[in-house]
Image (cartoon, rainbow, N blue to C red; front, side):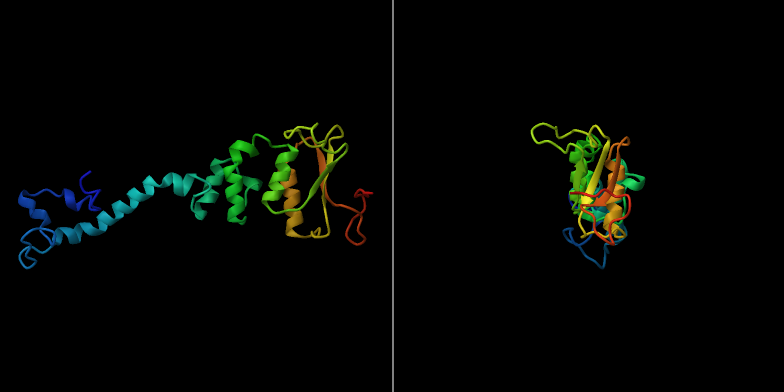
Length: 208
């Protein structure tokens, strides 16, 4: 396309007999005193703007829609298209975490929401160390990866060590992720993996 290949979509398409509108330094016999490059002066900023917009349009998938390559400032916008609204998203999360959630939204997250496998994966994405325990536990080679949480008793716990204080942001995030990605019919909570004096509270289970 004339003009786009040279980076001058307006200037190089100007009309004029014998290139009358484009007599400048690239024209044979150019005489700046006789033919100053007025057309180039007038069109250069607009040519630059059009070329910039053309590049952005051509790269919109890479910069806006692909969670692995999108510019960091576009991830919060893209999150809405991937189903992350309200409590399911935070603009304060790490960019790496955001990319992983978005990249797996339709292939794994929403399809497996409510499963133990997904909850464990989400906790891992955020770098949180917690072990899921439920009555009967999860049996290797018996239970399936997509099995829902809770078991027959519809109850499970996220067991954590003293690395996390009950008042810490990490603890609150675990409670939040557990609430969002667990089955609605399950009763669950984040608790310490054993009873710690001055840390555990009344009503929490005591593990042997």
